Image (cartoon, rainbow, N blue to C red; front, side, top):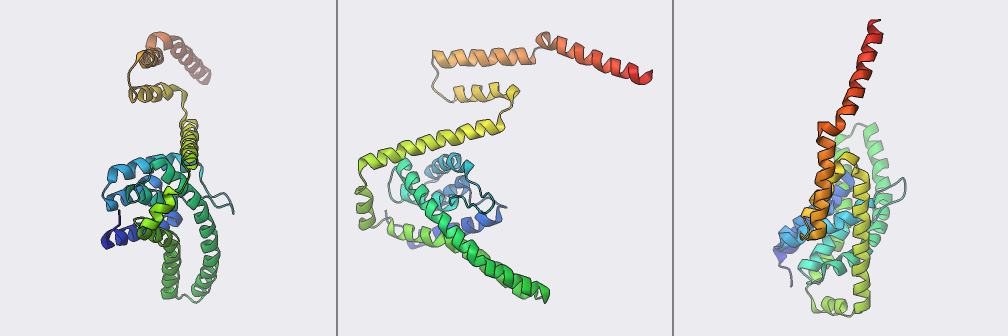
Length: 264
């Protein structure tokens, strides 16, 4: 579908905010879950925006800037993927896979923009020496506008052209074997991201709750009921004083002996 002028303007505004958010790291507007949801709200399909954002969030968990190494642009991938799914009518897997390729291009744009902003930093140093607060303010605003355009301009081009017959024809020219391969690749990346989350938040005594929630979110069958029974048994053993009495006694005796030693 072709986007109206109002929707294109709103996409441009959200893209600007996401571009600035990717540098500020304060309000997290560049995160896929937020950026995709906002674009979905603008395009009239919040549900798809949340689904795309949740999928991309699991993919970009491992994307981070380390030293001079710049990560792919998550904000650009989020906005373009959402536009392609909602306005372009593409599948979520294919759109995300294509958006990830564009995120790699966004990585190059990030390096270029950050290189340009070095000049702004030197200018702000000179303004600070002379205590020129007005110049400092203008320099900061111009630098942030440059960062916002890094996301907004490519997103605007996609938003304007996504509904045209030429773009649709180009998308349909992609061989089915390529789109299927991209869908499989996206699914694998999501699994890796999910495994990273589990590894980060892994706390032994809380894992039964995690598996219980995971099982209850699926369709119930004999395997699921068996896993629920196992998790309940583990929780019962962890929480029951009957199976933890010895540990309590040992810790109590140990603390009492420490107290006796102190008194002696």
